[in-house]
Structure formats: C-alpha cells, structure tokens
Length: 481
Image (tube, rainbow, N blue to C red; front, side, top):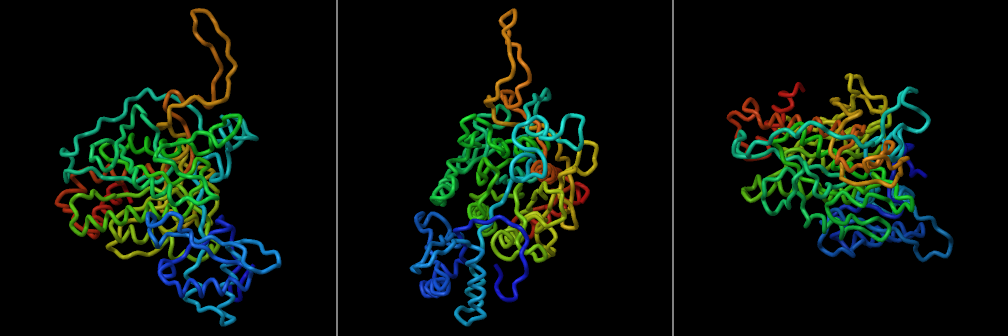
C-alpha cells in the first residue's frame, strides 16, 4: 500500500500495531488530536503507551494502533497507517510536518548463525540442515567446546595510559551469571570488574514492555529456552556472553558494560534499543559538562540490525539519529554487517557509509572472515561495509548450562559415564559459534586495546567529545584502518 509519490518499499520487519511518535508530538495535545483525526478516517485510532509513567524518556515512547468507531472491518497495520497519513497530506487533511513525525517501530535481528538473523544454520544442530561435515559451505552452529588457554592477564587501571579503562558497551542478550572468567558487578558500585550491569536501566526497559512483547527481566542472559516443551535452547541464548568473551580475550584491560536489549529469540525492539543508547549518550553529555562521577562509554557494539523499507535512502531519525548523536559525542559505534550474503544495506551497520564531520567518532560496519582470512559465505558485503574480522568458527565464553538433548550413553567400568557428544551441554562454559555478531566485538576489542597503548594515548587529555573522537580516530589508524 503506497501513498501518492511514495517509492515501492523493500522488505523489512516492524511492529504491526505500534508506531513511534516524535517527542514534539507527545508534548502537544492539539497535535495528537490532529493526528487522531487524520487516521480516524481510515477506522484507526492511536493510543499512547503511557502505562510506564515517567520512567521511559518521552521522546522514545510508542503509540498503539487500535480499531476506531467505524462499523466496517479494519485491519491494523502500522505501514498502512503511515501511508494513509502521508496520503492525507495530499488531500489537505494533514500537514507534512505532522506526517513526518510518525514512523514504524522496526524489529532488529541478531547476527549469529542460527535463528532469524542468518542465511544458513538453524537451531543447535552441529551441522546446518542439509549439509554434513564434508558437504558444501557448511558452518558449525553453536556447539560446546572447552578452552585450554588461560584468559590474558589484566593490568590495574592505574597502570594504564590515562589512568582509566576504555569502556565498551555491549547491547545484547545480557551476561551469564557467575561465569568463572567474567567477573561482574553493578555499574553504580564502581568496582573494577571486567563486566558491569545497570539494574536501574534494566528496570526502565522492563517498564517499557507492553502486553504484546516479552519482558526483559533483568540483565542476565536468560531464559535459556523459549517455552519449548522439549527444552531446546533458544536461538540466541548466550549471544551476549559470547561477545563479551571475545573482548575478554583481545582487550583484557577494557571494561564491558552489558545492557540487555535483545530477547533470546534474537529479536530487539527498536524502542527499547533507543532507550539504552539514549542512556549512554546522556551519560557522555554529563561527563563532557563536568560531571566527574560519570565514566563515559568509549565504544558501542551492536550485533543486530534490519533492512530498511527504503533501501536506496539512508534512514532519518530514530536509530540513525541516535548513531549520529553518539558519534558526535565522541563514542565510536561498531555494528555487525549481518548474515544474509547480500549487498543490501543492513542498519545500523550501513550508517558507517554516511559522511560525518571530521570531529565525529568513527562508525564502523564489520563483515565476517573465515579462519583462513577469506570472506565468510554468510557475510553481507558492499560499499557500506567498512572492515572485516574473524567471525566464523570462533571460540568464546558461554553460560554454564546443561541442555536438553540426550546423548547415547552407557555406564561402564570404574563408575565413569561414557557417552556420545552432547550438542547442547555447555557445562564447560565455552562454545564455538559463527556470525558477523562476533566479528564486531573483535574490531571493538582491538580499538579498546589500542586505547591502552602509549602510542595512541601519549599527550591525549580526554575532556570533551572532540578529544574523545580524535583519540578513537587514532585508535582506528593504530589497528590499520
């Protein structure tokens, strides 16, 4: 369905009964009434999602589409509503400014092999369906392994150049509770652990959930099943823990801030992602305004995305606007390029192709490489992909858990249990996995490691957004960019 003058859209994923409203609309009852009148002609009403009170930033509240007062049947479809609103501009029933402040709420998919964000490989099968270990371009899905090497030593923060750790924010499925190689604390406590969580922000995200969406309960990487009676592991359970372990191996002197925004089925709702990113941006602004109680984030890692419905145009507002805000605040954004083996832009990674001011921090999109250095078969590519890193058959940390699949086993002598390989028993705390999801934290970790060297930090005093951006630009050059 298209309004006059609108281009034919490409495929995308969006909430069918929700729209995102600009904060300038939310603050005006007169404008909201005008919006309601414009869409009421098509049998639809808009209701504010204000059940969460003042805990969620007003500029990121969504509105619910409901059936209006007409007696004829009506289908609820956010795309149809947006197009009808734009058509009302041509009919003189609505002004263009109002129509431009209503848009879709996109759903982003995680970029790991298995689940909705990948071209090949489903579930927990050791080999993707339709292929075996010696047949075709197969990639191992998520499988348990063990790691014989110790984690790299971590220097005290005061021994680092500049006297502080670079901070990497990973917005994903959360972090495993009590993993032996990932010490964790609350961000507000100020402890020098490798991972911190923010329970206060997680409560805001919990309050933001509506009746039709699953609730993000807390910062932990859970639950591990999606209500399956068979107990199969959810497609993206462990995703955030795996990414964090990649950083632990490559940048031990960094600190990871884990924010849970992705559900264990690999889906992230744009509204909730924006709230978390807004929190990071607000903290940076406070730091640059002289609040010495805030330790701002240096690098944001996003391992999810969506193809925009207007593939030829860079998206405006929403997530695109937030990426620009972070870059202008001196925060680098590193995003996974996606696993669809296509050149079609995948956002927010494709925002790396947007021209920015020389004073902005880098925005990088990362494709995946095989262990031999070739581009992985599943990886997206194109002029908007700015770099590549290892992303296939990687080993990293995983929540310590025993799965539901039962291997063949027999009790033998000496009271030892003898059994076949169990493809979802992760009691070792490690896994092998593939995806551009894991190439992105490789680049982020290399940037963070560069920020702990004298070459990059010599003579640098980070006191504002510009000096932070210049330091990250130097880090990009230090790792060969």
